[in-house]
Length: 386
Image 1 (cartoon, rainbow, N blue to C red):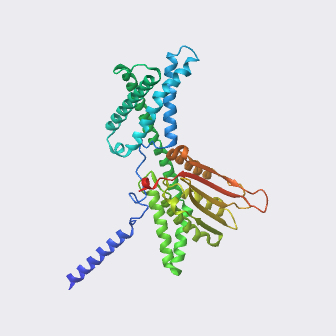
Image 2: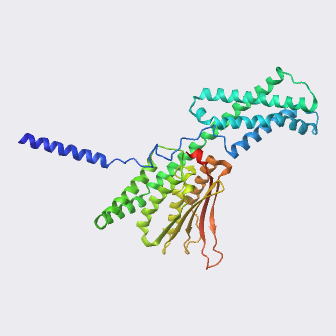
Image 3: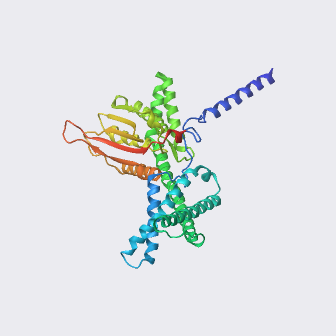
């Protein structure tokens, strides 16, 4: 009998320990590492962007212009030779970009020596093809004979060298996202563990335990997800849909805190949720709206989040009321958050991204000012998204 009681007691303690261990772990959610919607870090071969194409083409043309300047007899002869060289270099540059874009997935998975070898060989081939095209044009227009051999060697060597320089720049460009992302992750972690935010959220949950246990549980789950997102292993990209889910969790907690003082409206386009954005980019915007539009106002205010897909782009706006007693929204933290978002958008989408923020309206007392943050990112094709 005693041994039975001891076994039962031991089993009970084991069950309690297992239950405690399980209760202190975060359950797998859509915000965890490797979840759906998360993307791998950007590849240096992801050159299918307008900004990358422009920089590569202009960079190659600048090198060519400096090179032909040595062989030019006069200032008038220089642009003439440059135009002739462009017939060779421009198609070669575009061909390298197109092939690199098409092969970006296997090249990203390949080892670094293979990446360099393929990039250099591809540059050499494109340079040789460009020279052959130029020779064929000379044959068709001027009747100059086509010569095989040495005429193809210098363009191929030059193409390989420029491809190596270009790949080095692309790799540096991809790595440049890491400091910005790490900075954003640190700022986000500090924001998540702000003592007053944690204190107020826990107090809200404690107050709800007796009167509405299910709601209290939901508050703690939202808080756990916010901490999980801030503390999870870094990922570079996510979808706008996932960012909206996270922002909704944050605002649901703040709505419990402020009650009727805050009104939140979501005007969401389902198609816009496919857009790719840097991780943790929307939540700081809605947090700023709460801190600078709601928290400082004795009468409260409103926040509106809109998404709209149009003409192959996604427009996201976060608008919030501005308290009459503090019409100018300005602080160091606010500026740092906006500057960080702008930097990370530019690193990811280059010239295809737009970001602006500021007060709108407020010209008279009938139209109080509104603080609006507007962000534009490209919408990927459905084939790419799948």
